[in-house]
Structure formats: structure tokens, C-alpha cells
Image (cartoon, rainbow, N blue to C red; front, side):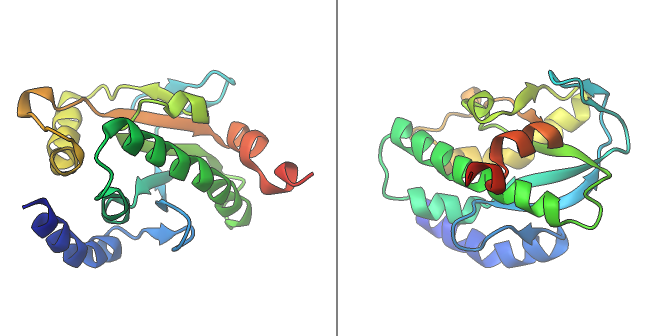
Length: 185
């Protein structure tokens, strides 16, 4: 059943990509697709002093779920799958820094945002985790991410659906940690 759903999702993914105005960072090695967005949530103060306010420009990251689930299809252990996801995200972080460096609005971009159920380990990569405040938005995100949970969990249970969280990293912290020119020196 999962393989049928994944095949169906593979068919729908190009339409999703088209309508969400996403851009690939790297079609081969990157696991993120991104787009520029204006933040609409409550103010968030990051640990480095960056204040994210309503209408600030952020790069919104989207895991390329179909690609990720296809690559994880034969991996039986959830711990192993978690490690693979962690490594793929880690490899993709310099691509986000590069994307911002080359963006025409790079001076206005304050950071990166994602919303996910897969937040464990995100702090090790440099993200800060916050729970969305608006109850309807939290419900909407939980419902919209439930199919991903059901497809990816070893033994999914409706009663165990995890909450969704915002992941933030400031542009400065991203650049300090993942800028390729610094990494290559």
C-alpha cells in the first residue's frame, strides 16, 4: 500500500512543485526545495539576537519528501532512517547559505524557516525550535503533515502523531556555520 501511495505522490509532486513556487537548491545532492517568504507568525527572538518579526523575509525550506521517502524505502530501522535524514540535511545546509549569498534580496533576508514534525536533531545542525502559537495553524499543519508521518513511520499510530514545530536559523548563524568559502579555508 505504501508503495502505491508513494507512486501516486510521485505523480502529484511536480504539480505541488509548480504551484508552491519552490526552487531546487541542487536536484541531485540537496534534500531541500526553497522559496522566499514573508513571515506571518508571532515575533521570535533567536539566541544570537536576531528578531524575526511579521513580514520579515525568510527562506522557507521544504524537505523533498517524495525523494526522501523513495531513498528510505528499503531502510527498515527508524534510527537508521533518522541518521540518513540528518546527514542529508547536513549536506544541504551549505546549499542554503549559497542560495542566500546569490539571491538578489540577500540583504533583506533575515534567516531560514521550516515547519516539520522531524525536529529531533535540528538543534545539532544549528536550528532553534519553536512551537507555532495559532491553534488553527497548528491543526492545519498537523493534518497536512499526517500523510508523511503515516508513510514514513515504522508502525504509525494516529494517536502518536507528533506535533509540528518551526525551525529557525538566522542568516548570520547559517553563514558562519555553513558558508562554503569558510569551510574550504
